[in-house]
Image: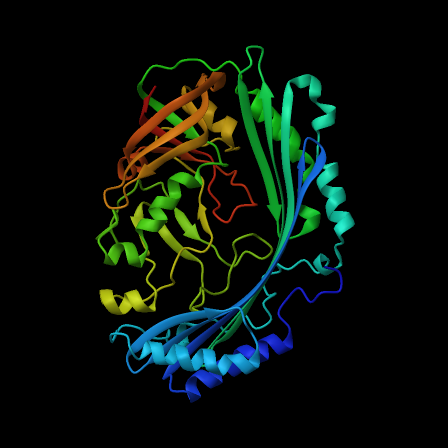
Length: 455
């Protein structure tokens, strides 16, 4: 990869601009062009030996065309100027055969991003990335392996993957929008499998990710994954019933994502959301606060604009239990007769809290929250399951640990939690201050009361 232009070059940007001009010349009333370029390098190891190497380069352009009250979206990875006019002419011809759709439009220019011209405003691009060599990548992947040092601990398998990537996106429309987002990502993940004395296998996984290589905690992942695997040995039986549930910060976003999805315009418009008619209403406990913080410089998930080019901003999503925001893009705005916002939550952050009657400890990590609630089941993994987006009913397989007096007693496996998301969140006891910074959803350890577990 050395010497390669890893981000969009001037000629590629020129082609995108040319495509926009050509679309209008060929008969489109309005148009939006999105040009994406990505590069990913991956080095996988198995038991301390190199197992696979992947190199993936992708470049594509998508064009949204608004033609005589009709709309169509098309994409191509053949960015040859001599072919683009034919591609656009055929696309426009296809759109003219579609039914009219009066709600399709570009966002109002007053709503679009004006501060994303270079793509690097959020400090998500590591300037050292273009100089990273194959030898350095291989060395990091091999050095991260701990297999040969832990054979005596019952470790029988170690599967590790180091990867890095760069993503560059340029968006332009016929209303004058020009914005760009450029970011790098460095990641390492590893799964450890151990064997107990009876021959049973248990696995543990851990990973870390960062926009900057210097901040990647690659050396810790193997030890943490091994510890998580060993901790699962000798699980005990727990009878079915209601328990306090603590979910660690590695898995807590699994319970927040359905809420966010239910606040989206498509689900609401199709009446496939358990959050219908909740805007401005107190649906959750008054101590619950979820905010969107998309402009945190240097942190994963930050963005200055959505896919339409609409500017993001810090926004309360759930404020003191009240639903403050639906996520409505330009199209859904017209269909629903509602003011547009942005198309989705960008970087949700759950703020620390405790329910009335519970002390708020100075430190709000997983162990502190277990001490706070006393007894219950700590969930450290979800194993499949499903939820109903219209009703909010859910059923998830879990693994984790029984704890008493804030201390882990023994692991538990093959249990199921069932319930309804609205009821679950009504029983929120605490949210911690320990979200994983490598995630795009900043969700800390969570504790809920009265959760039904079945064995």
